[in-house]
Length: 457
Image (cartoon, rainbow, N blue to C red; front, side, top):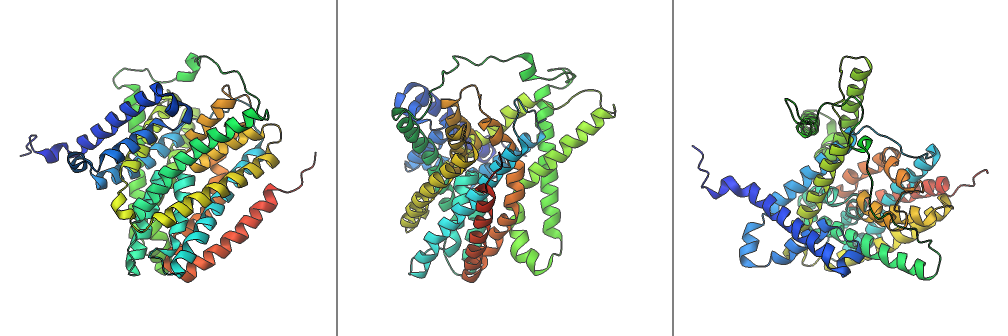
């Protein structure tokens, strides 16, 4: 018989209690301390850093469960992507298809650049005797470009590859540290550059809207189920998200059982569980399409999907992911890794900044700074960081920058998926890593030819 007085019955609740208390405290600090408010650092990152600072305290260190925080990070990433995939996509303003494709190309090519830069740092360090996993530089695009969830997923995978080769590499801590640094880089560097442009008069300061005005159409569309009848509308949204995520588990488990030969065992299968966000996106889109077909054929009379609530679910998942991912970092495991960590993050930040700036000048001549801040924020943090920076200079989203950021996901995924397979190929050996670097150079050149090609008026 279960004893609810047993502390083990409260373990997971305690972890979520720590997360939500840290979030509330961090939000209070951010709203009332001008320094933090001006920095544009997300409250979720401040909450994670708060837990990180308190972890050395004896009593608090026993409360924070590193393994539990890593599990929360992993599942929050997948659930957040599922919620975003289930949404009925609505475009508020016109955005050309070619601009969306070009924006996706910038995203994918920046991932490649970050991975290449990371390897340029870590491979020589390994060759010159540094106790470091040679392929660890590939965690830079996972931390900067993808965020804590993917940094954790591939950090764990890389740690297992390193262990199989007799190397000790705390990949989860290395990857999560890169992700946390990425949020700081995206926010602080973005704000500093924004202020520099304002002082030089190069950036047009737009008048901010004092408050956001919503209509009923923002909360629900015609024909939706009631807010509360036999089942609450929020319950329906959560049920759909969890249904899709359950199908994600069945898919990953099924792939794991297949006999896929040497390629499957060495390259594909190690990545299957790390791609929970990708499978969630694909199955979510499929379920959304299926519901749409049922609606058109009148087999389903009411609309069950509510974009507003799915946005809130996704936002909550990503906030929790950032807090838990940052809180899961163990500084003791980073001993001996500080030099490569600092070099990878610094060089990666510089390369991302100048590359994205150059691309945006070429692609968005009429709104280059709006395009830059939205893309730079996303490619060092998450899409929400890009939106936060964009709101500072385009609060009403008058330029196409916001739509480009939202709609580029599909082409970026199509462009970047073949490169993601290299994440399972490179860590197998140093030779594979060097081959991966060559492939990345070739891919970057191809993307450059596409992005910087001459355009007809």
